[in-house]
Image 1 (tube, rainbow, N blue to C red):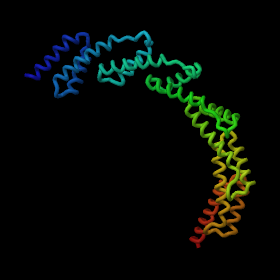
Image 2: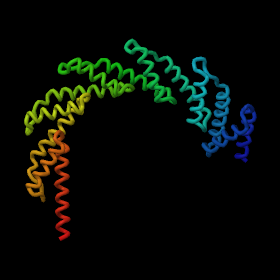
Image 3: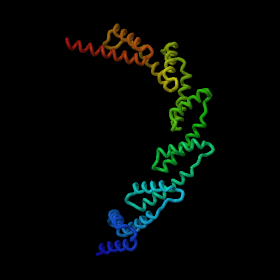
Image 4: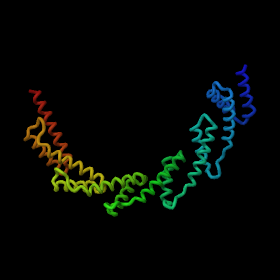
Length: 296
């Protein structure tokens, strides 16, 4: 009898207080309340009451004066998708999104940021996070901070201004939509340029060979100091390894010398490829030798 009385009470409450709520909506609200609060009649009643109020408020909600209608409809749609089982949570989501949208619209360029740059930052944030005003705001703040850091970057005493400006131009060309990546590239290239200036000789490599390696690196990577450093280090290591290779297990000395000579002719300007070719040819010789031995 108590259970019956409870549901009669809920029904009566719905009839008196939810006449403007469609039947199917009332039914959904009641079903969700029962499923959520199986053992609490009071919580079911409170939930039904709150959800009916929220549904009514939701139906009355219109776009504020400072929010375009199309934007408001998108906000409502996202709230519905995010909180499909609670009208109260939808309202909270809508109010939060409206406040965030207004905050986003009030953001303006500071004295340190040209208007054209600020507008570009806002557009990139909007394109990246079309369904999140909060993420747009965070993205704009981060990009503004990064842009200011980029503008404040100056060359060190060991880097000529012309080189520094060239590095910044290359970074801007490569990463036009990311000030953070521009900063990373500028820092990396400045470090690489300084390292290049200190690379004058190397143990185990004749000076003339070392200069040829550096020249090839400049020719292969004229616009990338980091790649030049990597190539020089790789070629130096390959040259040193080649000089240490006097023979190979299972390969006669005369055959091995011929392999090295052929590799040098094939790759006169690439010690890395010479080294790879020598190792591959020596292994091929050993495999063929084992196969001949087995076929006897």
